[in-house]
Length: 265
Image 1 (cartoon, rainbow, N blue to C red):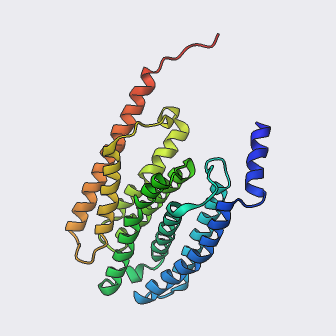
Image 2 (cartoon, one colour):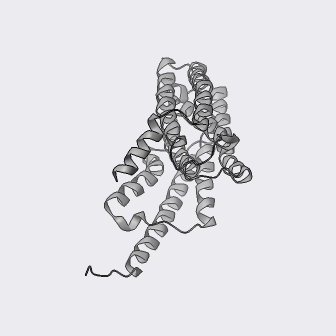
């Protein structure tokens, strides 16, 4: 245990690896651009304060950037270059940080009009980048545990942010926040119930459901989508995702019961 801990610590505190250098340069470009975009969108939406959305975006970029650099220096990323795939994911993360900053400007979200279409366009771009990074990683031979985790966690944050934006824009009620919290709740349950930590089999329907969820969440931001249509769409996708998680949880529980347990000698 001591040797593993020391090795990991050295990977994080020693000289930066090549991918970390490239990641640091990317963050140095993406962070100020994201902050400027957040402030600009807030001003376009006549927000009372544009500095607060920019500050939220900055905080997320700094925190996320630190985790990214740490991951690039760990054994979960064995490659010697960052690659376009991870650049795409980092760019997507910056876009999510911009959207998260707008959560701090509810007045802007109520503005609608051109501002609403601009926010929708950004969300569409972020959604379009999802999947492109994975395809590039497979094509370039840069697949890694870090990249897969980075992509999944970006999806989780995107779902939370989009749920908050839809709720603040009065497209759905506060109950819609549950959609973004499903995976964090599942992970938390796994921390106290070991059977939920077992790996799930790769299933295409699960990927389809994730894509459908994000697509509906993006569509809810369209200025033309309003209650009761938006409420119906929100309730429908929430119910579908609850059923999806229920199917996985049932499979994990049944698998846990089927695994033989041998008493210690």
